[in-house]
Length: 232
Image (cartoon, rainbow, N blue to C red; front, side, top):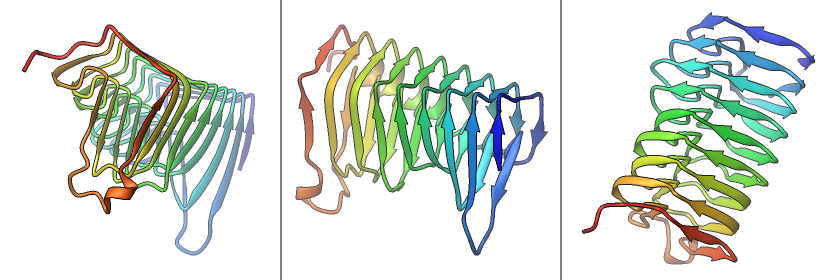
């Protein structure tokens, strides 16, 4: 499937409000160029798009005000996602990933703002292959439980040249990692994020991780300022 300069608005489905894809025996491929997904709704996963065994390449597309009511991925769920120059604005998930949930992702030069979920206001990944984000702005995303901007469980994380500002969660105002498998965090600005319980900017828990060697976190040439969590 290839979509260019198209608008998908106001669609509803059980999964994949606008687009659903997947099969048991082979991969599906979707390319999106300059596509707008707006006000789409899924009862469970993938407010705009859902795919099992699906590879998606999305460039300069916009995902706005999509909703996964009872599941994950307010905009996109379960696909393997490559995203460049995309905007994810005001998407909502009942569980993981207000914008992108339960998906291995590689994102470059993206903007994720005002997205909401229980885990990972913008991005939520559990036992995904990897989450890589570079050149991104993640601001004013909210998680009611953990990871205001990003929440990962058992998933390696690479985050570079990004601004995470004004995000909030109960634990890990900007970032939360459980069963930690290591993270490289370089050239970041972690600014004015808020946690109601622990970790104004970051909360990382290595409990249950595979081995000590896999749990290293490197914070390189980054600024961490103005983040807030209650005093212990």
